[in-house]
Amino acid sequence: MKNIKYLIIVLGTMILAWLLPKSYHLVTDKASPNIFTYYSSIDKAFCAIEFDDVKGHLIRKNVKTNKEYSEAEFDSILPMFYSMQLFSDGRMPKSINGKDINPRVVNSKKFFFRVKPADKNKPHIPLYTLFESMSKRVRIEMPGDVFRLTDRIEFINPETNEINEEKSELFNEQFVKKGFQFPAKMAAGNPSTRKAYEEGYFIVDNKDQIFHLKMVNAKPFLKKVPLPDGVVPNYLQTMEPDDRSFYAFVFDTNKKLHIITTNAYSLQEIPMPEYDVDKDQLLIMANPLYWNLNVVSGKGKEVWAINADTKEFVDTTSIVGVEQGVNYSKYFLPFSVGFTSGNTRYIKPIFYFGSYLVLINNFILALAFVMIIRYRKQKIQILPVVWISITGIYGFIASIIFNR
Picture (tube, rainbow, N blue to C red):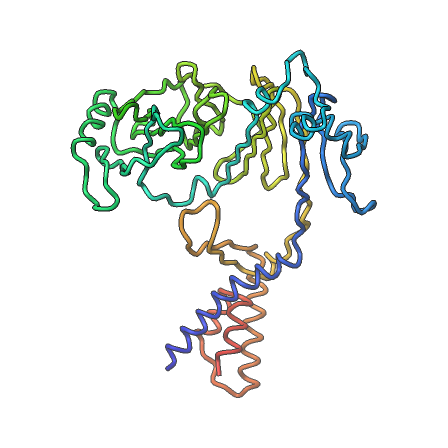
């Protein structure tokens, strides 16, 4: 019976270590403002939309000059973002910065690309769908099988779970011929049929080499991507831009970003703010003139504008996150327990520890527990006292409730 009581106290302590810190931060934390920021090809400066607490409504302004605009004026200074509205109104300029502007040009160069830590760190089912790249059909169709990468490439019928040995051997010959080293570390591709075209997968082998795999007329196509010295891939994500100018984004171990271009698979480095793919969020908003790179981290948001053609740095602005003030919880909460994070693959207990000064609070709570037990005229037991000295307020509350 005594063991069950101690087990209940331990369980209650862990639940409190999860709930109390969450409740504290729910009450005390301040959310950083999510301010839309975009580089204006007309003003040659960053413009933003934010909520003005004094005026009580959204304001649209030039970040550099603080000049405010009406909604229609704001559309005009951000013609690449509000292109559909301007084309509809007949207000889109014929050319900007010497470049002809029409719906075809804008749509072919305009895209949005987002990466979160969970995209890289969440578990993935290691089964991949390889579509036909030269299909004569209008729409991309499912191939009827999937492939996996173990000590070789194997194509499997998902309905019967049988391996297609003939197709597997046909593709595996190319892997051996091209020098692919199994097992593969990662494979990046888009398994959706709702895309304009199919470019297969980019696979990183056991020696950090990148290979492009696709199926052309039912036959394997495998091409090794030449990597510059010092570039070791950490994460890949593919994309199908309308202009077919590049295949994928490559995040390397030096925290740099590259694109694999369609020009002989050459890598082009993309200048960007300091970015950690395991911790920060990245949003790229591209148009025919500029790429807007937004990096959101614990410090706030930093935005860079780069030239869409040359990929040269143009301008930058930053939005500092809301100052949270002193985290007093570390002085009375010895630790906290979390179960989910964008930096972990699975749900599991994650411990965050407070200041060593919390030991003073733990000692006071242990003494208070002894006094309460004596007041109740119960027998003092050493284990709950030691438990409170270690776990502080969590163990104190659990022991007071269940130590009867």
